[in-house]
Image (cartoon, rainbow, N blue to C red; front, top):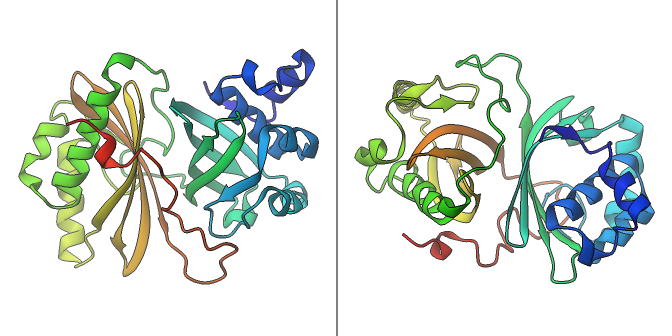
Amino acid sequence: MKSTFLVATTAVAIATGALAEDTMSNKEIVGTFLGAVSQGDVDTIRAVASPDYIQHNPFIPTGLEPFIELLPVLQEAGTTAENIRMFQDGDYVFMHNIWRNAEPFGAAEMVAFDIIRVDENGKVAEHWDALQPLVSETVSGRTQTDGPTEVTDLDKTEENKALAVGLVQDVLMGRDPSRITDYISAESYAQHNPNIADGLEGIIAAVETLTAQNNMFQYTEIHAVLGEGNFVLTVSEGQWNGTTNAFYDLFRMEDGMIVEHWDVIQPVPTEGLANTNGMFTGFEGVGPESVER
């Protein structure tokens, strides 16, 4: 479903009168909102978003009107978003995006995971994200965003969410790292982290290198687990490079195993903050305790 937010979503919604929240799915509401942001369409933004819009990007002020006041900065830079993947888990829509002309966010091109909560009135109500600069060369030869996008196995969503939680808790949080082969396929594992090669061998090599450098990342807490079918996104907090980081990990599952991984890692800033909401607060009912294991 690769597309840009500049195309049809907003135009179709306006032309058909579909801005009435009861006629659009949560994915359509979010697509309309982000399309309007890219176009600077303030009327549509106000139509689909809550006035009390809560912002968790630490550099963007909270509230809808303060957010709208920043749109001229994006317009001047020519900032646009290309959506690679979009999924829904209840009230939460989570996306894998590339932001272009994204100097206001820190680099010319940024890869990001964005999460938006749609409230009970069908309004965009809350936003979380993590971004890092897009790189042109990776160890695996894959890009940070390519690979399958089709959602399958909707009946296995909860099973796959439990699989992701198990991997993070046992392997990345160190509860029982020897269980890695219970979660990750030894036959086929496609890696999109730019610094890690494909397969279990790539993970093992990366861990050995980071450990030798005394710089192994440490996951300390899972804050959110969102899934749709064969895709699951976990949002975790941890330490790396001497800083606290947000770890966003997207997994694709097949036949009860994890076969593909994308991620974004962003240091949690402590200075120049535009709001005090924090990057991890506000997730309701989607923490690891919500997953049946």
